[in-house]
Image 1 (cartoon, rainbow, N blue to C red):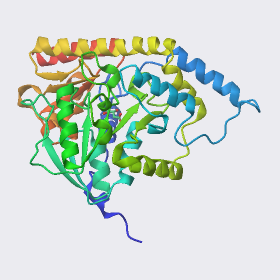
Image 2: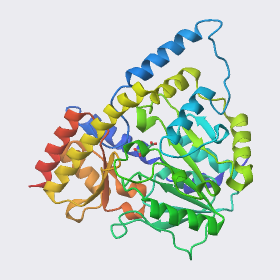
Image 3: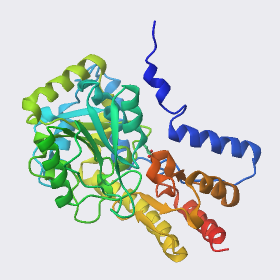
Length: 391
Ligand code: MLT
């Protein structure tokens, strides 16, 4: 046998696994250290009551002969797809039920979608970027080209007509920078993709955090259904990081329905669907009650983001994000590099963040803090950071 030698080209360990290992080493050596984790973007609030009720009911159904569900449709139950359709319709996007594919999360789909594309496609990704886009393409041996996201362009790079590519990754609101594209910018991306005959892989996992007038979906942009696939998730919207449910929209207009047909073929072959109980919980997110309850949780995280941002304002530290996003992307103080700042903060304030270098070369002097933490711990972390950096 021969192994897939492309794996020799990825870093030894996934970014968030490396951070977890480093923090575990630190806490093993300093068991008394009151470490606060604002690194990985994992939620801390429980699932909302509407979701829990729906899942309880579904569990009861599963205990009866009539209510029992075995294999479900691989692309998701009709009741959930209908709820997703209504949600998109609420901001003016009409979806056909056959364009919606329910999955166990955006991360899996972002990687799995690559099954549909030839290994010789050229991939365009921003730098910094969510490491999954890069690692999955390295594993498949694709050529990756980078576009610079930096302070000058507000970490929102625009297309360069002189660059040729086949696949384009966009994430808005962005992980890790928190920056969000407006309509005019996304229109430029759609026009560029069409001119290139390329496909945009659009990650909308953080759309629920949008507070300003920016698009929640690439399909709000005219022409996007001809050139884009969108990924979304209940993880950050409704606290499903451990429950697992997301969805991918593959438009029927895209390449005359070919990619939709291929994705259905891929999913029916390699995926057996999300558990009925989980899909019932996900559908409850879109009920009036569920929407009101998740808004409460989202407001809690948004308030955490404000607390983090105002500390940086006080310290005079440059940052983006926080407004339409649960992430704050800050410039490391005193010219420090991001892994150096990671160690400095861990050792001197017992606060964990994510080094920008983990997201790419352009992140090497930046650092990401998440607003998904517990409120009291976020306030405590801010106090420690202020004390340390105002010395
Ligand atoms: C992150 O911290 O960037 C996220 O947790 C990543 C993810 O959602 O997989």
